[in-house]
Image (cartoon, rainbow, N blue to C red; front, side, top):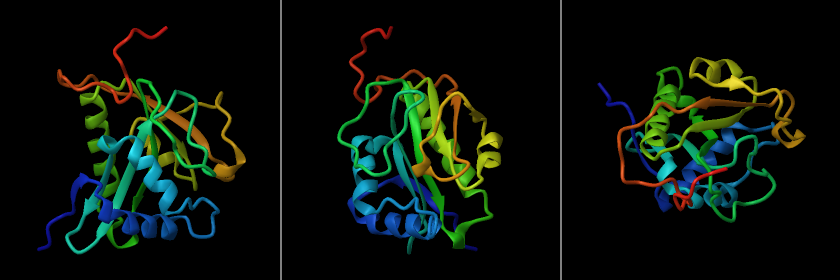
Amino acid sequence: MRRPPRIRAVTDADWPGIAALEAAAYAGSGLTEGQAALESRGRVSPGTCFVLDAGDRIAGYVLALPYPESAFPDLSAPERAAHRTRNLHLHDLVVGERARGRGLGGRLVRHLTAVAADQGYERMSLVAVAGLEGFWRRHGYRPRRDVEVPPGYGTGALYMSTGVPAGRPSNRKVPGDDGAPRP
């Protein structure tokens, strides 16, 4: 019996595979960003970006980065720097077609949520696209209909967020956070 893919940090060698999965997942939707944009998002927060390593291939990935609540990446521009915030934005999660139906998307969500808690994030957000609101609801995300999503995210895109359970005590800081109190 084959072992399930393991979750690990993204390496430089993973980006072509990530870009291929993204292109396949969003083919025809106009939502593909391309490898350079994906890499730029991973560069600003490498500690919150992961792949599902199936040994011979990348079976899936999740890219998340600090972004202010009610805000999200511009799909037409690369990321320049990490934001100082206690909100972690789950920008993209894809499980390749060959690996779907085995709970791996949920496994990536749970892993990222644990990492977010450990790193001191208080909230997580995302933009649900392609009719996936139900998947995100099952993982605790709730619609924020007060946040308008630009048309570039596709018809029916919906901003959603959730609280992050308190993590274990950690000496790690939120990327870009200097520890100063927030207003």
